[in-house]
Length: 199
View 1 (cartoon, rainbow, N blue to C red):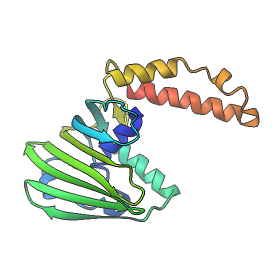
View 2 (cartoon, rainbow, N blue to C red):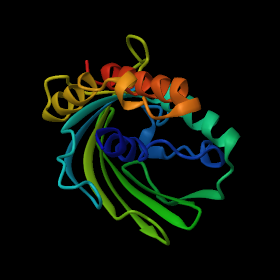
View 3 (cartoon, one colour):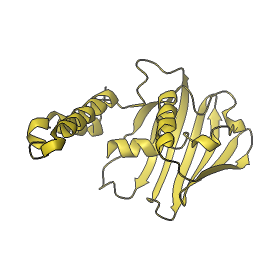
């Protein structure tokens, strides 16, 4: 669930491939889809979160996020389109439609490399979601370029780390038969993903 909520926050800047040439004026000193961004979540409501609290802060390497998006789109070609509903030096509204779902982000410049984003989903099959967050551009990605990182002492990371620490691939995959090796590998990968995200 932590990863799902983080993905929604990242989606505010990660446009689908057909729209990656959009360059809102509000981002004149910060590349929208490159480098490292700090996201401070001010408000978030996501249906199906089971009441789980959203991470209050995360760091995102947009270079890694966009590479993952490109790889995903090579395997699946959703019908996506994006447009700038409004575009001024101080505010932009971007609307992206994919497979009948609409993701709308209102982006307001707050200062040098700092932006207030209010986003929401709508449309057929969309998971109801609203968010208000502050995005701050911090320059080039640092460290190993992990797509999303959270503070490991946050409640979300403590819970996720405890869950993966308790996972025993051998026991959990014992009844997987011919798929046992694949099952165990997926569990190990899940643990590695959580450990990379929470550090």
